[in-house]
Length: 371
Image (tube, rainbow, N blue to C red; front, side, top):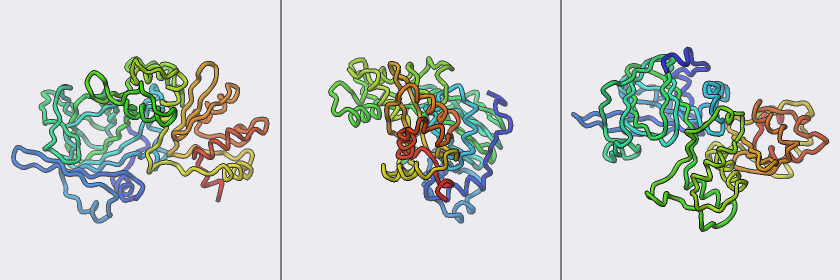
């Protein structure tokens, strides 16, 4: 999509990205492209990195990648507005990569949709057929494909966006120093959904962990997605049906159970990014201490969602779930929509149960409130 996002804003400089890569709680990688005759290999180093390592990098053949940028710098959630036709529970993270000329992470494919938004510089993209096989010899740490030739590669410049459906082999190579913003989707797989089913409902004989036909893993997909499913935080009825299909025709789980499974998996944060939760007593004390009209902002790392099942509501926060009456569900809709609330709006009729549950689940960033 040429020129789809002219002047990406907010944007990162290479020095700002490098600073993120020095932080202990930030997932970062350096990938070096190493050529030996006709053979190319890729070496991976994992962060955090020391400043002197980053400042002494060569002038070519490397890529620095930083995951979950929007969780560490919440202003970057604004870039998700470019894909507001997709349910926000499906959005996993914003990965930002900076590459020197010749830098690449090699030919590979993902099991989820991704939007590759080009900032400064140019990156050449080669696309391949879905039947290209994995090449284990290229890198010991990257699941790469055998090199392939694209007779008509696409060169992405400032503001261009490349959309890739799941499973499409792609191979990006930096033509000069360049920055790419990758909006990646979350596609729960059968193993994740099955593990959540066991965790929530105990051992279930009818829940598989692999495809019975091929033995391969199966991922949630939504090629029939409609824009009315994209309300902030909403897990639609269609999404629940798709998750049930992913679990397999033999499953005896009802729609509410499937909704519990999908919502828990979809909002489960990475372990090192999970907001800090508090105890019941701490949540009560916090609830009582909060000013009635103080603004409570959703934590940058918090994942929240909701669904409606049979006239009642289910809400999810950081992998936790609870029922919520229909008359209270609109309160949580607004939390998902605005990613903020006040004590007054959440505690209608002096019912503090919802607020305390949200506090226990680590939904709000209380740093300013507790200073």
